[in-house]
Image (cartoon, rainbow, N blue to C red):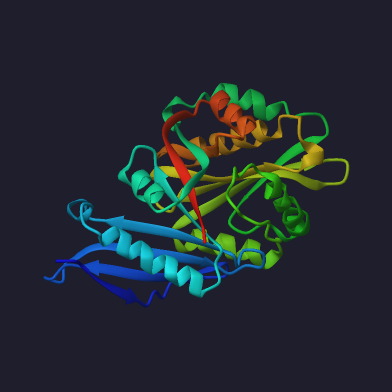
Length: 293
């Protein structure tokens, strides 16, 4: 007998999105699957939704997954979304499932990990202590210091031309409130956000940044977020400089951390080379799929 699909009220909301949710349950009331549809709410992204769908392995031969997908797709249309994106690990059953419903692959992400015990502190120190002429490093934890806030907001636009394959993300303007919200989101997850920036000494403006979310208890793996350099400052090795400083900070200030995680689009070879140089090694591949409504 087919599972029952129930729409749920999801209390989770953020300044950038809200979620719709559905639960699939068997005749005994036991959950066998779920779907979450994130509706992006920032200006320029009202056309987009993101799907997360999970099915119990025993239900994959039934139509439960397709019924959950149908519910999410109908809701996306009701909310005037033109595209749904979803990600799946390479080789997982989700690849067949998404392509069977007309999703198409638009981006390949390679995840990598650096075991901190393997980090070469001496080599990192050489990189950090020999910055390109005209640049210096700064760093902080949590919210950006007031003295750097304005130039840090401006530097966030360095991500606007980051390769995204065919994923239909629109550039969303940054302001100080959005920076505060991003920091709060990391803190609400129980993590600490550590930021390293490269400062151009000619005008004391931030030329680029890299972020690392460190678990609050200082154990397990930390997760790299964005690393970006403004176009006019590229070609000086600033990404490698900032990431080297981030790695050394993690190793020295959080000795119980096991490793650092990152993921990079395959069409972003510049950052891939930086990660390779610093000792990150690929762990798995994830695909981004997109459905045009």
